[in-house]
Length: 261
View (tube, rainbow, N blue to C red):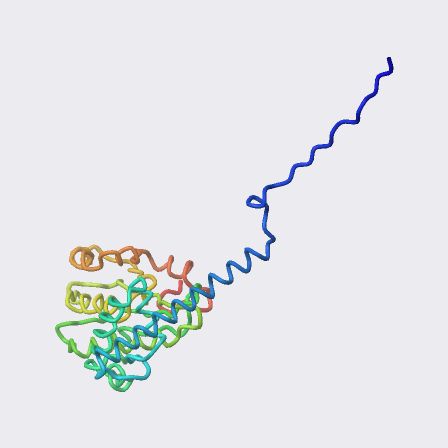
């Protein structure tokens, strides 16, 4: 009897429709749609905050840093994790404070006497991360001899000046406290508390990092008093020496003169 052999059956497997790989462009389009939707949602929140501020706090000023400043509204929304109610509450307090403090009226001439001491200044160059730099020379701060209100005005003026140097994409500044030569005569708990409150309530998340440079032992009691006030912001503080400032935060051409080797 003749035997016949059938060729082996060629099996073909195909993915079920639900498991098939979608074209790359589908994911790209989905991602783009998510970004677009996020932009739309953010825009809606900004407009909602504007409407609430207009309805509930009509007397607040408008314009730059006012109740209709969308850049400022967005920043406070980010700080409050996009909670409209919390952003409105914090913005209201900040805008009222700016008006009462007279932030818009501050200038170099208005703080001239302390500005000329160079006890604090905005550095001419950015750090290696592209951030404006605010330097405080603690050994030139004398709370018993210098007017407290003028110290506060100088502080806010320099914060405003530093933030004005932020380039697009840069959202915070670097603060450097030069503690070389610090003594008990320079210790000022109330000014540091003012500084902490200013950044927390009125310039939230605008301080990217704080360097305490060459802190002497006599600074420790003040630090122990101040640290609890910082709460989560304490993680922004770094104790270091002048060499670290020079080598990690600047180039040879941009380092402040006080920290050159």
